[in-house]
Length: 637
Image 1 (cartoon, rainbow, N blue to C red):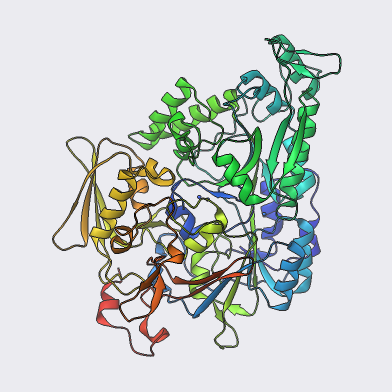
Image 2 (image 1 turned 180 degrees about the vertical axis):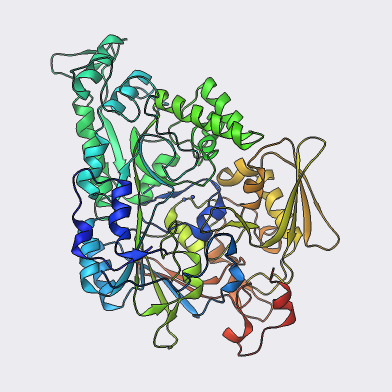
């Protein structure tokens, strides 16, 4: 949705929730996650999300209506070839951390797109400036407090349940976000069709309620302390918690980004520390450098941390987050939870043969997680983004704010003059190695470089052709057989043709090298066949799963001629290795099929991208002034 906000937008009551927020905002406008493609194609590129979900690409933001330029596209009629672009030659991802600086840059034309406006005062300030159009959408975002359950005291489930019980997520959400997000007590966001609100799930006091129903009349803190006492926990003379075996609860440091990067996240860490203190657990927030935080969490060197995820539309992302097999260095099971019953349910979810089974298992998994409490869900944020109103071609839907791929492809200045696009990134880029990168900031860049076989319809969330023009699923001897046919005429950014061999090599490489970020999606691949036409490949799976199509179809596709030269994927730095295109242009090894090609990165300043002249949506007249070729026409569905 795109809105020109009035002050009425901010007159939220204390209990403003999702429906109220959308209803209020809806008065002032009209309609605008593990898998990789859920991230790169449609997800809002929001700075509060400090990791992209596994295999999704990504620790971590009036009355005069402005209709979206693409408002005529709806639902199943959406066709990517109705878009042409990129229209602009240069794209700069501007690294700007300070929110006040971002807002000033937006108002003065130094930024064109700003993601993740989450503080009401900032939204109001930008709305008052009249410089931008604002868009809002529900997202697959979820924000959590994660405990390291590998070590004492957070290996104790009763303590985790008590900690969950004293969290006042409704008050925290209300006070910090004024209705621009909703309290989250479950493990999938409310927009997910598999969301379980957990109104009666788990032990009393755990889940959606802060009240222990078995102890009527007690406050949440009193009920939580009673829970601990009933399990044999005690308190010493100073009031500090002592475990049943006599071990005192040590200091818990809650890692979080500094307030200069994510002010509300720092506040939440402080609130969580206060909640733990009310139980007698020594605790404090520990704001640290964002990159240092990521490294420590990856190395399991933490007590607790804040983290947020952009999840995918499929609930088997829970397998990646909470199955014990994913507790590896660089894996997504950050908490280290390991429970046989949870593992069984998550496996049944991962290999559900149909949607009905998937729904049952998704609900069971969420309820078990509520009991085990390896993390505390806190809130799911709406995405609010701003695009300067001197641009045409802004694309939005009720599920996607303006900071999406189609906007990037379609943007054109209203004055018709060629100029760069300036798109904000609120944190330093960690790495542009697509095989190890995990932050949303990295994938903001990488998402414009790499593509996948299938994508997601931004109106319906249904599957949509992308690099593959068609696909089929058939039963095989051992499991499902997936067949994909690529669009004709596809090329890499260096001008070389993309073939089914590239797709097959990407899948084999990731599986053979056990690449943690993507291995979960390819581990069930038994074999791959490429047809003589080099456009068709068949992927033979070792079993049957409702999610195989999304796992394989949503995997990033890497160029074989680049990847086969990489001796160590862990230390590969593609931006530091020159690579010559067919026309003699010197690029880097960061080569994909997406709309923009990497050219230069300057720490603390920007990442410079240039238009991919071989992009499948780019008509020749955009770059050379010639008419559309027969090859380009043939690529259309």
